[in-house]
Figure 1 (cartoon, rainbow, N blue to C red):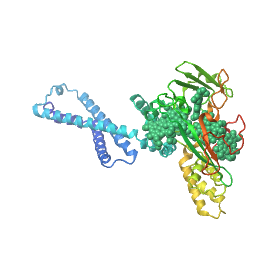
Figure 2 (cartoon, rainbow, N blue to C red):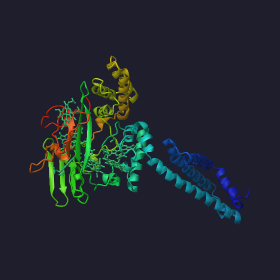
Figure 3 (cartoon, rainbow, N blue to C red):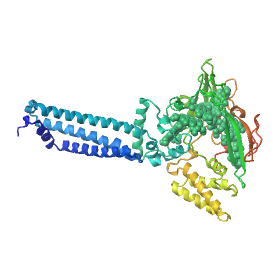
Figure 4 (cartoon, rainbow, N blue to C red):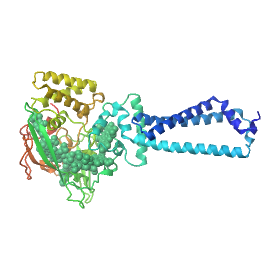
Length: 494
Ligand code: HEC
Ligand code: HEC
Ligand code: HEC
Ligand code: HEC
Ligand code: HEC
Ligand code: HEC
């Protein structure tokens, strides 16, 4: 055969003698075919499994590219091996040559178009809630479960964790690669550490949806408690939380969101990774330039802590659980008793169910924890006359466990502090504990009425009398000794 005169056969033979190229081409075309079928399925039906999306838009395309690169490399090798200068001279003639070129161009064009489409879908797939939340079941299960019953259940993970713009996108994909590696090699930490040290500043995420200048005025909070006694005595608090606002054009400046006023800047140095102890706070009024430093008299800043990076207070320092809310046993049981999902007339049911939850938190898995709950509660109430009520209480306690306790990831309310409020975590009292004083001796405000006004409280399910003057807190546990924080006695469980 006279090679130089027949460019077609030459190309074939270039490949034919070269197994690398043939393997590459075979790999590319098989992957292309598979991806094509899956894309068609996705187009007409959509995938319900995030894995298939990854296979279609990430794995197969990388095989196609890999195959093509192999094939190209093979041809190049073969060329070099033959090194026949005569081949270079070969000029395929006329029409056939043009047709070949058109076909090749069309092929390249189609391939690039599919790649573009594929990368777009790959982007969509990796941004989806199912990808972030459901792909690595065990790892993300706690955060995903809590998220699904939160006020932000319809907000995509990436809207808070990545936000808009290319630099954060790239950063997140790079750290994402490491996370995949950590999952595959099983070296990820349990529980996943919090706070997220590299979380994007809230201005660029939360404020995409929440307008920081908005004036909220006072927001009513109604919380129904049940005391841990034989009667599960109802006890409730209704209060106006002075959320306020920080922008004079939209309402009076003040209240809790006063921290977020554009002219205010609050910085602090935490003493620990979890930011639960704050020995040092600096408040700068940007308008007047006045600076006040408040130091804790209880835990002064140690010399080593002085070199820590400073943190500027933003939404996350209070709203650190806007969506991954892990309820304490008491809190979750209060809700169930309130909604009548557990019968109030069962003696001591709140304490007993809470004890069952705490005990099961140490189980090896969610399934064995759920079994433990059944065992403990059915033994406890084996003599109780109304067994259907007990069965209902058991199944509700199991639901609470399933939604809030994740033994596999060692995750529950104990490792997920909530910084709003001050009942079972220090929260606002990390700074507002009456012990953070400035040079003049004035402390950061800690009067009970600074942040809220109690308008009703008591042990009637719906108190008739509402006081707008504000009531002194009537603590069911008796007079609160001075100098002790709520969280030193309350932990959310027996
Ligand atoms: C409304 C905003 C928002 C959404 C939506 C959101 N997160 Fe989060 N996420 C946060 C905040 C805030 C934190 C806590 C950050 C901190 O304290 O530093 C967090 C923390 C986490 C953590 C660290 C562990 C923890 O509980 O603190 C993981 C893991 C996580 N999120 C995964 C997800 C996944 C998966 C999704 C989607 C299913 C998601 N997040 C959706 C705001 C959000
Ligand atoms: C994509 C838009 C979006 C983003 C981003 C977002 N939110 Fe929200 N947020 C909402 C919507 C919508 C609601 C109202 C939900 C409702 O009322 O049911 C809401 C409600 C809230 C509430 C009131 C919750 C309640 O109990 O009623 C708080 C507090 C809040 N968001 C804080 C945050 C914080 C903090 C961040 C950043 C970590 C954030 N949000 C990010 C859309 C968003
Ligand atoms: C100093 C702590 C603090 C900071 C900082 C803070 N908030 Fe709040 N915010 C609160 C408290 C307390 C409430 C009352 C509701 C509650 O207790 O859950 C609240 C309420 C809200 C609500 C709900 C109002 C309603 O009608 O229920 C939204 C939305 C909100 N904050 C968004 C934000 C955003 C966005 C930022 C950042 C720009 C921010 N907050 C910064 C403490 C704070
Ligand atoms: C990092 C420390 C820090 C944390 C945490 C913090 N604050 Fe503050 N807060 C301050 C400082 C500093 C001031 C200004 C000092 C002053 O004038 O008393 C202030 C002032 C206030 C004010 C008074 C605003 C005014 O009108 O004068 C309210 C209300 C308030 N905070 C509520 C809260 C609530 C509610 C929380 C918890 C959700 C909270 N703060 C968490 C540091 C903090
Ligand atoms: C720095 C602001 C601040 C101060 C000072 C403050 N509180 Fe609160 N308190 C809050 C916030 C914010 C919440 C709402 C928490 C939530 O949304 O769950 C709250 C909630 C409560 C509740 C409802 C129970 C619960 O579980 O959340 C009670 C009761 C209460 N406070 C009592 C007091 C008493 C008594 C004092 C005075 C010793 C006080 N507070 C001082 C901010 C404050
Ligand atoms: C010295 C310990 C102590 C301190 C400090 C304390 N409490 Fe209590 N608290 C109790 C006891 C004891 C009860 C009675 C019921 C029980 O055993 O949980 C109780 C009951 C309650 C209840 C009724 C619901 C429930 O969970 O039992 C609320 C709400 C409450 N306290 C809020 C607060 C708040 C808010 C603070 C801080 C301002 C505070 N407590 C400080 C010991 C304390």
